[in-house]
Length: 154
Image (cartoon, rainbow, N blue to C red; front, side, top):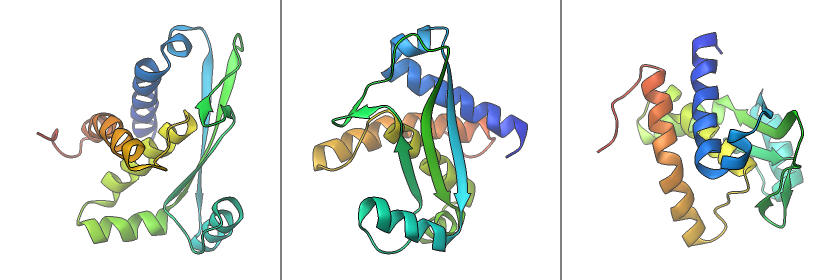
């Protein structure tokens, strides 16, 4: 990922932290997120192993600080790893084609979506799904603007 794009992603992740985890965002803690690109075969193995679902998916998140569906990070750590976001770029490209959007737009969506999962957000009920999609839309649009893509949604 080009350095400017990476900085924009960091900025958007920090905006999400500030909005949803303000004590962590205000602290001196440095957070770390691992982003891994995998093949469809690798993603299918992960999807089966961790979700019991056959076939590849676009993104999986592996939060380090989730207890009972809640984000529960330790307090006072100087460096805090949040977890891993695993992306299958081939599935992302396929979904972009289905939706008729640029691959970069779909990538922005899955990265932001994955980050919300690291913070304990889920979409296992219709209400939670609506809330998650509502909350992630602003950060996705912000990331696209910073990447020089698209205009803000109305």
